[in-house]
Image (cartoon, rainbow over all chains, first blue to last red; front, top):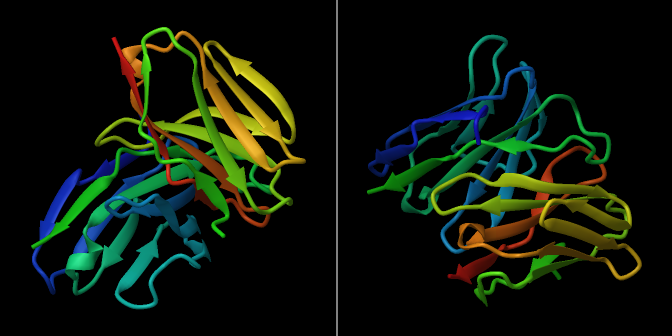
Length: 117
Length: 111
């Protein structure tokens, strides 16, 4: 999965703390997607961003979760006041352009594994 | 009914056998279909990407789409132990580009 860089690879937080996950898309890609993979579950879409804009956040929990993709720097997925149920693998994907019904394949990073103590 | 369904397996085959993987989907508006491979502790890796019905071949991999049955397949010929992984079908929503994934099928190729 060369290209999409996520850090940290592993993150441990105590309940109530904040978690910040970073994603740098592939070179030339300006569209970023975040997905969550809960233990024993499939990948679920969370949010789709372009530079400085949130395009679709229909998969984001209503509270405690936010995402941004600033003009400069990586995309950030932020989880405030983490709870045990937030423990999961969080994956970022990128594509070069907006998909027109899905014609832009997404390339994934290796994820951040978040553990909540 | 889930939008994309996939048998979780595990599917165990001897080295050299053909691996056959399937997904069904519910929305006839879907146009593009993808297969990803995911090794343990790694991110999904795009394997095959097809549009509408028909076959697409890439090396040992063949993807098939049957839109009339809402059924997609991935075949791996001459399977190798290095093919042992979880295989995910993924379908982008018609509006926008977010992917809906099947639950994944775990494949084990035994030497």
